[in-house]
Length: 200
Image: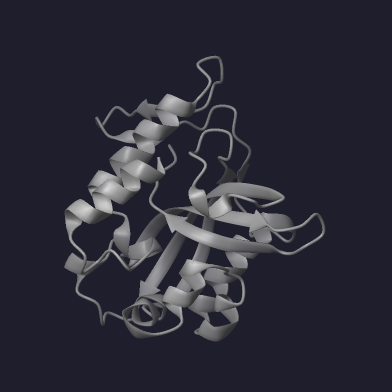
């Protein structure tokens, strides 16, 4: 999966290659995530990708525990708190819930501008999709990791051209990758990746 992402980033040009998360979730990357979910899913599991009546691809709800209220503990709470703080325009606090390259990227420059594009965030749905999502290189060496499908309703500042980001006013969805570096350490976000939407 890492090789596929690397090739897609290189093919798309170096101008956007240094950015992460919200802004690199192009259709090609989303397709590669979908393919990886299908390829790495156990064929006996009841989760994975389905095609809806509209012809679009979705993450199947079957076998997933779907949270519809803001979570209060664990990795789920950290993922939600990150977006909630961005919505409250507490951008430095939201960065403290990240680690690694994504935290460095969002601290300044264009990455910071993307980080601050969100001015409001409402929780919609969340589900643990670790069992069907590809394991990314960012989680190597961690004690534990989780991948959470996270669906939010954003209000945006409007300073970034919609051509340069997949963020939109209204519904947005991510595969939020988190790690626990040691057994009792706090959960931290290492990647905000693209994801097909969860079926309704």
